[in-house]
Every structure is written in C-alpha cells, then in structure tokens.
Length: 138
Ligand SMILES: [Zn+2]
Ligand SMILES: [Zn+2]
Image 1 (cartoon, helix red, strand yellow):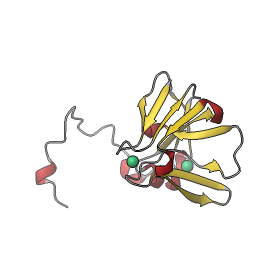
Image 2: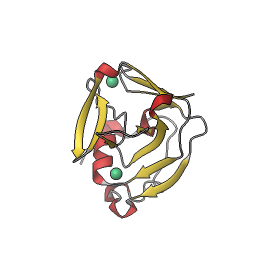
Image 3: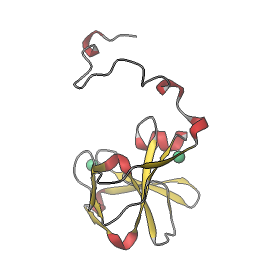
C-alpha cells in the first residue's frame, strides 16, 4: 500500500498501486507543490481511499484541470487532474509517507527548471539542520 498525508495530517490517501513518478519543473507545479519541482504518480481511482477528503480544497489551475490541496496546511495532494475524471488520478509524490517501490521515471518541462535551484547538488549538505540559519542575512 502506498500512503500519503498532508503536513497537518487532516487528509490522507492510500493507493493499492502507483505508476512511476514523473517530476515536473513547470512553474505551476513548482508553486503548487511548494518546491523546486512537482512530483506526481498515477493511481486508479477505485484503488485509492481518502481520509479527511472534506478538508481538501480544489484550485482550477487550467481550463478543465484542477489541483487539490489541504485547506488547512496547503499541502498539494494531487497533480492537475481532469475536472471530468477518467479512471485515473494523479497524486502528489511529495505527500508520500511510505514511498514503497515508486521511483522517478521521467522529468518533464526541464527547460523551465528554477534558476535558483541550479547547482544545489554541489553546495555543502548537512544531515541535520543548516547550522548557518541564525547568521543568514541577505
Ligand atoms: Zn493539512
Ligand atoms: Zn508541471
């Protein structure tokens, strides 16, 4: 079982199976997911159970497409799904608690990559918090 939840815990999903994960660098996915990229996978609607779905809010990000997020904490819970849904649903990999065997299979809109995240693999990495927070100034 693949499980996801929002930051505050009000909304949870569980999916029996999931596709590979697609990472999207477009500005809409970056903003919706609150990160350097969005990451999504596909599940079958009738294999997904929701807890606290009444806490979801929906934003129509493009004509015919809507994204669902927790209205209390803002966590993206889905990708851009058809407002007239088919048998599939796009779920947000960023909400996963146990990611099981799901792995990234493709990166899309790579040309729209946020310039601020360029080179982030080369800077110092810390297993705990960044020790420089208190002295960090512009
Ligand atoms: Zn929440
Ligand atoms: Zn996107």
